[in-house]
Length: 185
Ligand code: ADP
Ligand code: MG
Image (tube, rainbow, N blue to C red; front, side, top):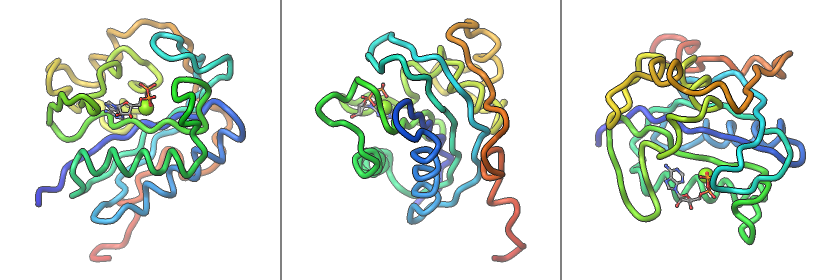
């Protein structure tokens, strides 16, 4: 099986947002056949009402980078299970969300299926996705647009507002766990 680098975006805009993000990152760090390579800093983001109605609550957003053997469709199933476990309202999926997990990039693969589109179709316009991605891998190439994350960020509009959360709640955000392991572990 070919290991692929995968970026997963997370966001929460209701309840104890930090706790939902912490738990999502913990669960993502425990995925089988996978290794956590990096966790971005956390950002606070004005809600966008482009295609969903998430309400007025500002989001906490970030991105996790993993390396995995899990197939894209299996990963989507797992992400939905994590969303459900963290209390995402299935009746009103487009409303306020305890946790939203999106596959942003799955290596250089382009997937266009009814329930799975990768790269995520709106990611290149969203600064709350591009800013954390840019921390983790600014030169990562968007496979269909053929532009790097840093180019996409430079071209994205300045709205809605995205602020780096300050202070950051813990050192796990903005870390590269895989790099801190001792050699051979
Ligand atoms: P959004 O995240 O765009 O606000 P939702 O989380 O409610 O919206 O979207 C849920 C559905 O989007 C999922 O059930 C899934 O089938 C579909 N989907 C399509 N592409 C992706 C992707 N790359 N990552 C996550 N979900 C996706
Ligand atoms: Mg989603």
